[in-house]
Length: 412
Image 1 (spheres, rainbow, N blue to C red):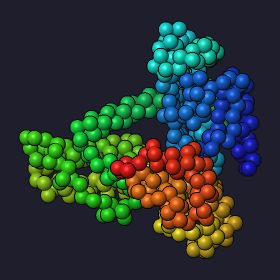
Image 2: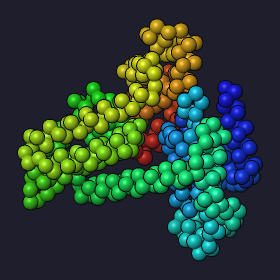
Image 3: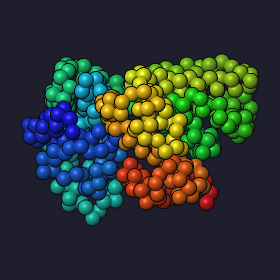
Image 4: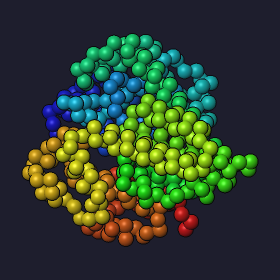
């Protein structure tokens, strides 16, 4: 392990001791690298499972920020999210907390217990909330500023941190409104083909421009159900839903929020100005190409040309038995140099990235097809099913069988 990671661990311990706050360091592959828990248990409402701890925070280990983010969990706790960089390379995220801006009343705690149906843990929940440090908002902003400087050697002003967090909250609010619009559309049978929706989102989020032409043309068949009064109005409603989904997928793929929302608003205005079906249909393709191309640009900007070529090669040969040495030979680099370069830029080894990419492909096959698990294992060139299951569970936390039961979108 690099000396910088070891230094990061020591800073985590120092932060925990200085501010009496628990600290967890997570790498971009969702691995918990280090914990400084200050003898404080996890919120009993998380059932003491760290993975469940991430969900109420809406935490994503791949997200990167150039300032400390102060976020509020679904259970009223405040946490500091601090991205950690070394030589401009993203190494992971430090989660600091929990704290509370004010003492929480017994009534509120009782409400959280009731909403979570954690009646058997009632006393533990009360004890937990009474043990959380009280840190008023201004002081928490100051602490987050200090923490960001300690990890990244960049000193922001507390006012800058406050303003950036306000912008972050506004953007999250806008995303939430988009999510609500999507839910309402789906409840009204808009964009009701879940398999097509999921496939489209994966293509956009992955920046896979070449695959757009292979997407089925769903617009015309869907539009007939969206409006009883106007076929064109129906078609427009469907495309507006498509825009919202594509903008969300592009943000998840790495496009800056403001760019995605700018495209979102611009395309909706364009849709409303059109009055011919053929032009709306052409615009739909342009929408998908534009959002997907923006993701590809964001991904290419994030990595050097060499690493971009490596990632592209891995994706194009997913269904083959590829290795670190194969890729090094293809791009004419020594395996040792490729290993160091890839780990520095991506944060994980080439072999780990191959495994992660193959498992993500397996997740799609499990969700969208009826292909037997044993065949998926063979298709993706795993040595045997038990090894495939072991790797799949390591990445996702569940076995392929359980994943299919939870996420399968086809009738069995």
